[in-house]
Length: 527
Image (cartoon, rainbow, N blue to C red; front, side, top):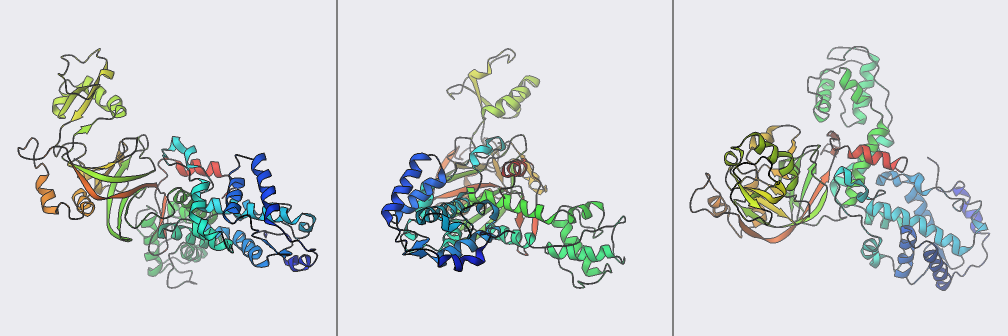
């Protein structure tokens, strides 16, 4: 990897060549204001301007009559080690100014502002990602890009005094343990090397060959070490390591290394690292700090985590949207739940599912416990004959009960896309491995347990369960009863194709929404 300066080791020599600089804040202010006027929409220029305003235009990298070696060297080190943050150092290393042999040709204010611009670019990427999430609407991303202002508000108390670039860059990035595990594994893979496994035969217990030795090395790099590390004999410890690898990569678990397992093991390590970095990029689209209480749904693993007081208190299987009806990435809040809810059929599902089913089966509405409403959502009489009817004048609603598509509890969110969490009438589907089955909303496997945590004793679990309809149309039960939560819960939906387990191993899920593919294409060499 090339260094930040082509001749960084010559830094001490060229520092002595400076004359007395005496760089004044007024000079920095004048140059920054010119930059803002000439490039008003440039986010890096905006960040530079706001950082300087937050410190009354005092210099960062030039102090007194010389370059501040401490700040400068820290910036160099931070950029050269950007891979450890899941970012590409080369993005910040390309500049004629950033060569020690030429830097003396520039004015002190140009050097000061340019180094701050490089620093600001790295700071922004660490904070909000290289890509704008708003450009991935077609892949069901419904998250707004973080603003420069929000970053400045975050770091404002820290930019008034001495700035240590490495500390600030790390500070603005995601603080979750999941993100930190991704970039740690990325760093390990980027720096790793292992031979390819070359074998025309499946590798199995008792075989001896150079391919077995390559297998051991390849597995060790990926986090599956075996006891007899230098042996070319396929022993029982190696078979057990293979089984663990196969389970994590959805390759069965027979302990035999056939063509599919060899192909997966031989995948380029840097390409694996790229997938980790793409997933880390999506973490940057979420708030830096998720809060001490939150719900996190991961599309891909299809799991929901409930965190209360910074502790994971519940984890459950969920069902998310199928590829043609994707569950979007969202940032939202949950403030209430509904007991025994109606299901108001969204317009998309009405067009794709309800109308075709109704036209094919005249008894569909009755069999599905559907009610007919007008365009104002007021219940009306069902037409005698649906053929030729203008369906834009009608809406549909499913009555509460165990067979309701939302089950018996709906967890309300505030987004404009009719996406929320809910119970289900088909709990058997949670036994499936992939669980991309819904029309976009998130079905939860333990709705009562989740509601119990969210209600926090305002309604006891026993009371909650007593309100749920045991059978359809049972008398004396509340219908569509809304219960406010004692506190609103931040709720995040994240698309994830790789997680890192407690052993530091990659656990992959398919890129069903093809968001990895779209992001990789957009990033090019930026990661």
